[in-house]
Length: 181
Image (tube, rainbow, N blue to C red; front, top):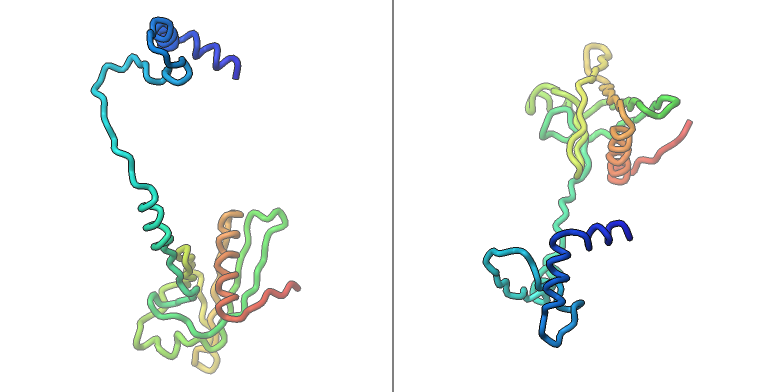
């Protein structure tokens, strides 16, 4: 701090200000008036004071706007999956990557697939955005769709944390709980 003060007092601007202060003939003190001296030769600009009490009142009345989106899973964009999945998590020993395996028994997407279209991927949607995967497999029993298995791979700790935030919201919305095996 002392080095910065000595550099500042050695600058040409500081020397000019000190000279101006010595030649100042008013009765005011240097501490009050030193900021009014400047080498700036531009045009002065007057800015009226804002009415801060009015602004504060308006901000308090409106408050922050938070978009709340119900966490959902979709196989076809725009069509929420109604079946709650069984979710298995794996994580590497060093914690840098992991995988979530979702198993849907008799998913509702098969009930409405003719109306909404083909399965295009696996989409996990919440207020932060969309997590998606294309690793989706359907299991058939006697020629009829019975299960869907979707895998979501997390390659970084940041992706893992983002996935866990989604799962916490999804679990709270659908009554799921975490069971460590």
